[in-house]
Length: 113
Image 1: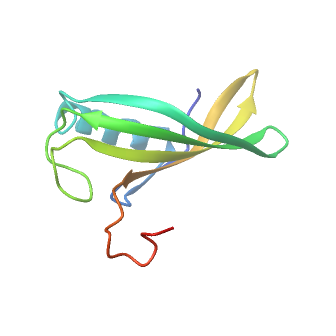
Image 2 (image 1 turned 180 degrees about the vertical axis):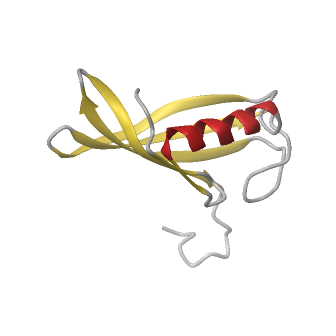
């Protein structure tokens, strides 16, 4: 995969451009995620235009320090949404959005669907 141009993390923080994305991830991987591991599973991919696709990737992370929307060090699950384009014979992620996922409460109006 090539360079990401925009990255929105699980907290809704929007990082723009390769330099900012690399710098912020470097800090996080030296601190919060220094002992973490992440498993990835492709969920779906859909072509939305010539040489443009949207991909959803499921992830599971363990071993991290307190973080995420729920401020926990417990294992976390989530989904990345990537906009990908074909470029120079390879693939390039041009936009990424990351979100934690969690079980729907039994009292939620959509719980039985």
